[in-house]
Amino acid sequence: QVQLVESGGGLVQAGGSLTLSCAASGRTFSSYAMGWFRQAPGKERSIVAAISRLGGNKYHADSVKGRFTISRDSAKNTVNLQMNSLKPEDTAVYYCAAMGTTFSEYVARRADQYAYWGPGTQVTVSS
Image 1 (cartoon, rainbow, N blue to C red):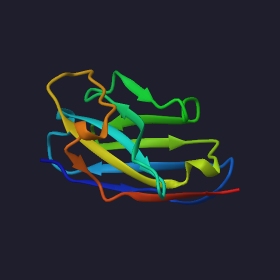
Image 2: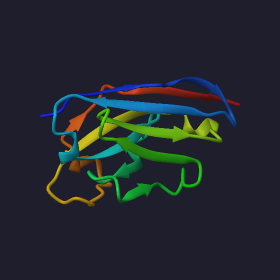
Image 3: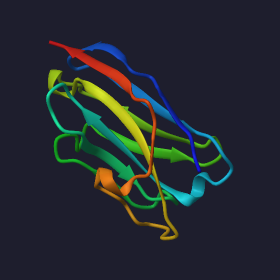
Image 4: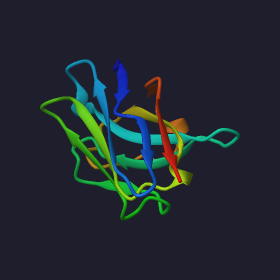
């Protein structure tokens, strides 16, 4: 089992940057593929980015490709989301998620594949 806590959200102007961090508890962080999702008011939760458990494979949604970068630090048990060139449409609650897997470079893109979720952090981008 793993517990997740996000940090780094806040209010930023369009064009600005934020880095979200997700801290995972436990000693088996490398057993989990990780993902970032977001949910805006009135919309469904959607994938933003995902990374395999060993970090060699990554996925970024088309809407954030070239602006956001997911990474993981196994020494610190964290997964980060660097967000640049932020747009008002990026405003949402951002969630970190973990999926236990034995496949080293599998990237999970669906929310129902993830068993563990953090409480979320709000990102607001003003125009």
